[in-house]
Image 1 (cartoon, helix red, strand yellow):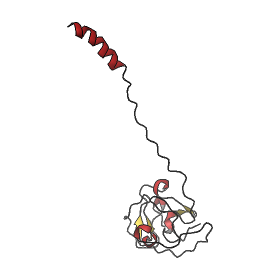
Image 2 (cartoon, rainbow, N blue to C red):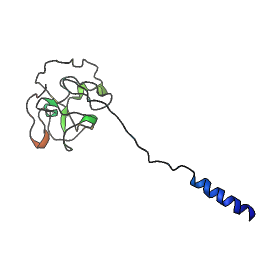
Image 3 (cartoon, helix red, strand yellow):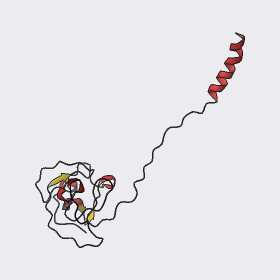
Image 4 (spheres, rainbow, N blue to C red):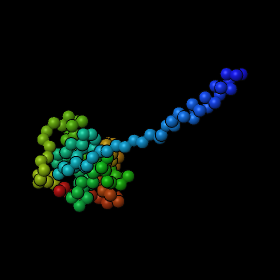
Length: 142
């Protein structure tokens, strides 16, 4: 009993002096959006995509709407890509140079949602739906 009278205050003081843990905070900085003439791939390392990878619905007023963490399209967006130009599908050809002039002969073979997911949409090649359900037109590339 004598020891408990001495030990109790020491244990209480010791437990009160233990620092409380702070809530964890996670911050991820992905950096600036890549400056690519025809857009960039929708997965890391976000390299510039060659002309023809993205269909016209990926461009609004000639400006790429983004992909991956910089995607600026609507939640239900689906746009055509030509996965023959995708390194994940074996593409090892040339990539665009800054200032390269665009041409308008896109033929997509796959739909993507801007967040790296395949599928969606019910169009074959060409057009597709842009933002707000309107049909995307022409090349639209800058």
